[in-house]
Image (cartoon, rainbow, N blue to C red; front, top):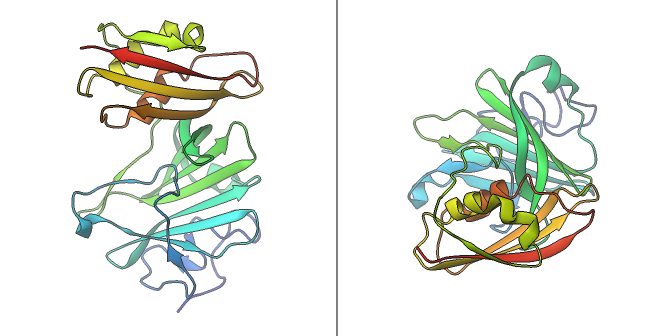
Length: 257
């Protein structure tokens, strides 16, 4: 049965709660009567999972939502495990801050215009057997809350982490060109490290937009060779760069070996 009420909300009328989503408790095998499959083009922060075959892939659904919101749920082996609330406006966090334990805070990537990723500040909490993440876009009103189950034998999750965490600095020379060369050159070692896994020679083209405070706000990364998690890595490498407010530009990085 699909319930419409009965779970304590973070704020009056909120769809996502500490105990479930849309009136369904975590682990429920019921599904909302109206839903459609989540588009592959929809990027959600903290949505990674580990799997190598089609049978490992969870079922991601988008549900009807009021104007200014989007609602997503994930089912694994027929049970509700995760949910995301995307809102063009503030999401109250009072119950999370009161009842959950802080884990980490930092900048991660979220959804943006087609082809781009947005920089935003994230905070993560744990509560019982779940994690909760709040993401706040640097250059728009968009906020997102993700509530996720812990890894199980059948569903192994990949948690989000700050983009500047675990960066590798490579001594291999990288040639940087473009109108943002002077802005990013101090981080050439980190940029080169992002290209370590790629077949050589390799060129990466990075488009950047900065917010009004001069911080990276949007990034688009294109390479001529495959490189695992290249967008997240490049975002981390340039995350501490600063530029005049509302700067936009491009740089390319070329590495021979």
